[in-house]
Image (cartoon, rainbow, N blue to C red; front, top):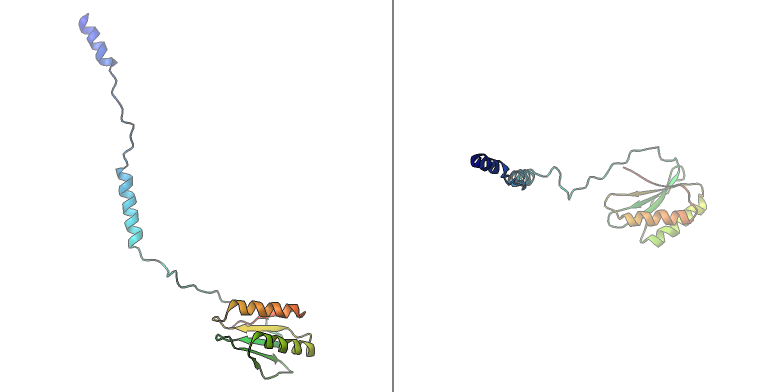
Length: 145
């Protein structure tokens, strides 16, 4: 009877289970991924921004006022079309706005096209569009190359 009770005690013992997760394989995988991303060259240079090219949606009108903004900030204005004038240079934006107002009084139905190269300041173009809208010129566009 003693031997059977001792056998019962052995079976009553429970083994302690490990409740920890082994993280070593996960660390190995993460290190391999880190090395792969460090070794891979960057697909493109983040300092280079490719500007989108504008498609020519319509032909420019036959008669229009053209304002040209150069990289160095030089401004010129002229009429293109049948009443074509040689473009006049303007020393600053105020002088250009005065010339635009005079041309708009002579030809109120002419639209305005602003041609700026890609190095010209965005603010200059926006200010000219704003000034033209204040004069009552409804058709103001940007010339693309």
